[in-house]
Image (tube, rainbow, N blue to C red):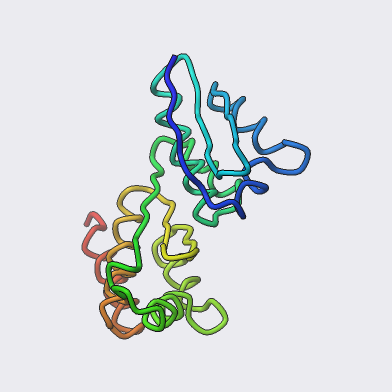
Length: 174
């Protein structure tokens, strides 16, 4: 018997459980695990007979905890997809004003910057709390992570989009 406990924001527990327990049941069925959820503390315990099932379920729970809807988080069941989480406080340090400004840079006016990066890198991005999370193939997730880090370090949006396009051209086989 293998198990792992993850702490998630209490606001995200309802999303993890889903309407009438639908999301929880589906996740347990797809991953051959049992989820024990303590909604008072925000603790989620993943239990399974196989360690690989616990290992595969953990990023899905983390993705839901970091703001993704379950439909997108379930993309992590596909072997080629991965989850990357960037802590914005690494760039904003302890300044709350800077944290808000950096989140705004990533999201952009009416979500335009986030949507552009998602479109250019074929990833899904969630800005939640003090983190930015990315779901996609390993190559695309790495590219989106680099682009977001560039934005967090102060690069202009246009330069970041150009960086993504140049990087994709270099990766294409001739």
